[in-house]
Amino acid sequence: MGEPAPDEDALLVEQLDYYRARAPEYEDWWYRRGAYRLLPRDWDRWRANVAAAEEYVDRFGPTGRILELACGTGLWTRRLARSASHLTAVDAAPEVLELNRSRLPAEAGPVTFVEADVFAWDPAEHFDVVFFSFWLSHVPPSRFEDFWAVVDRSLDRDGRFLFLDSGADEANHEAADGLVSRRTLSDGRDFRIVKRFFEPEALDRRLRELGWEVEVTTVGSSFVGGWGQRR
Image (tube, one colour):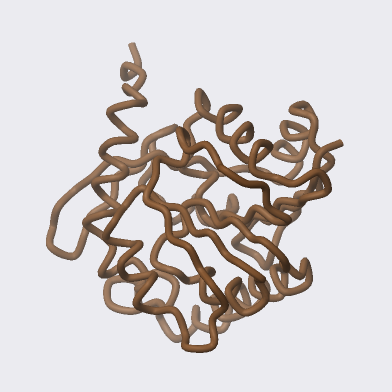
């Protein structure tokens, strides 16, 4: 017999605990510092992937009233704040919000930070753009439609969404068992989180089934990106 299915509610609580504890070292992954340092032969590939992700977001051109869901410590908040007339950044972890706020550049436009469970949050206004990065892969299957309902409620009539996430290439570097991935912090503490890896074609098809007009594609060699709007 296989392993019993994980309790998704308990798994999401542990996932939040992990990101709260990881806040001070979260950006080490993106900048490849410390435990995430790469061998010299891998640096060019990683830099090319980062450049591709930044170009993907810039080409979309997020402007106006922007909502960033699961904003984390601000890797993309800082970029979005350059072009937003107003940016609302939502995350459930107060530690990452504090770091995000402290890292905003002086030239950033107005940003409102909201501490809230993304699944339960009910927006009080509508936005021109809803953005989320490296979050969809942490949404368990049972919450997938609920999350997209949040996106739907958040968008203005002609609003669009944009996202980035881990691609199948990253799965080769994960200690994952189906829905569950195990992560270890620099202090040795272990956590379980939700981690799913989407193929662009399958994700594109699933979102169209939910009523979105969407384009999902590979970004660089390691990421998946998608944008769309209501059909």
